[in-house]
Length: 140
Ligand code: CMP
Image (cartoon, rainbow, N blue to C red; front, side):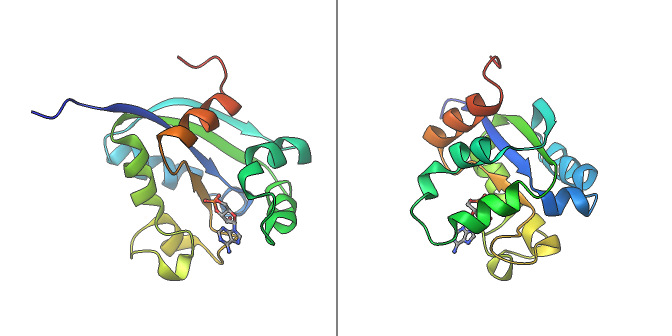
């Protein structure tokens, strides 16, 4: 039998999701998948905090615009926990580009562009550890 892998992953409702008042609907989708909320907080990201979070993308052409966007309004940052949490959140979020996201996913339903795509989700176990502790350093 494969051992149960309990993971903690990070999700961010981006400024477009906040402005569209989608927080409740997004939480509902994660909860209905069986995941448990481990931490949640609203942030008004500073440029430095946003740049540090997305530092892996700092050489990409979209980086300046992404930082502009992520600091354009409040975000809601959440840690979700459960079996296979990283993949579950990625699946519920859908592909980065809303046009390529599967029907019914958050990005397909509400995303407007590859940048304004409503949510962020950790993409692997290394990134989830960095990302969860970046916002919730005391979470155990
Ligand atoms: P996210 O999953 O938060 O990871 C990086 C973010 O950069 C991505 O979602 C988008 O909001 C943004 N972005 C803008 N352009 C691109 C692109 N061409 N490829 C990937 N991400 C992009």
